Amino acid sequence: MEENQLMESGVSELNSNAFFIDPVRILNHSYTRFRVSPSTYYSRFFDSLNSAQSPKASEDSRKGKRKRKKKIQSLNEREQIADRRHQEVKPFLLKAHEALLEATDLLKVLRNLRNDVCSVGECKELSQESSELSFMELGGVWQAPLCEIVLNYQQDDKTLQNGGFPLAQSIEQKVTPAFNNLVANEGSYDIEAELFNHKYIIPKRSCFYMSDMQQIDSLIPAGSDCGFNLIVIDPPWENGSARQKVRYPTLPNRYFLSLPVKQLCHTSGALVALWVTNREKLRDFVENDLFPKWGVTYAASFYWLKVKANGMLTGELDLFHHRPYECLLLGYCDGKDTHSGNSTRLNPIPDNRVFISVPGDYSRKPPIGELLLDYVPGSMPARCVELFAREMIAGWTSWGNEPLHFQDSRYFVSKTMEN
Image (tube, rainbow, N blue to C red; front, side, top):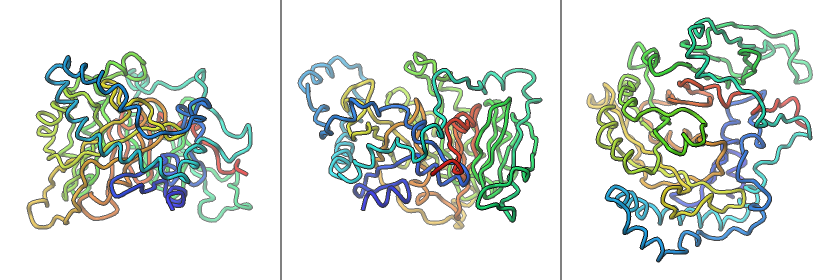
């Protein structure tokens, strides 16, 4: 049962409050000609040594309990609050993980998530030596407004077919500014784009706006009835770990106060989903400063629990500074119709819901939009936007200074190359 659900949708319900998700299958709903390569998405936690071990319930989190009790006494006041939060959500995390370990058929699928169905040599692996464009550097130079991206539309979409393969000569190109400009693929097929000799895959019915925070106001719709019902935000929070890994630059937390969340909302209001770390200082900032400034009322918390390919947690559950889960704070931002009687009734959001997956690349969040749609105000289909996006999804607007990061063609394989 769980296996069939996962194969079809990429989401498998473990119990009433927990799900396992395969981000690759979910993302591939956005593509027709291409698909996300599992071997490049799952670049970690699939080493043979760990995968060969038998999964056990999260007993490792209980080991050394006495040791940790001694350690808690040395925590400062803020850290003690963070530990209390952890102890409150811990039973939900353990129950979700135990449900995964009991789903034996699902565990078999999990171990093979990284396997491609294409032949050897057909999938392009992204090696550490491969060059990548630095969109942040490109967007910061004075020539940025002159940078253009070429969109290649296959004209076989309607009539030109040759045994199911696109005709090479039936390509229409559109050239448009890459930065500070809304670049859209309004068609029903994914397309290939070119920027500085690099190729990127743009999902069907999607768009991106690549800019820094100074230009985000350009994303605000002319009318609130054209605003967004679902706003997912993954800020580059101040983070010592991120600085050490030199993966991406972070920003002081106060910078995010200026995000025009209220202005981005649809007239029916919006569900706001904010990724946060487990640091209590950040939670305090969000609850007391950020959400009030944005006009967001807190509603619930979801948790992303990270596992390896064999079902084991990626780290010890009680390890204070490196816990194997992240939090998604959910809240509502009122629109013009919220208090006018025209707003739609919402399903209550269950608190402490857990979704489990094998992580992709560092800082890459799983696509959780489908899990949130039942709680989005307004009519369907919802208008969705992700702020500080690093990839794109069909039906979504992606904003940030590197929304094309994971759209590089090296993360994909063409369906025409599959067996």
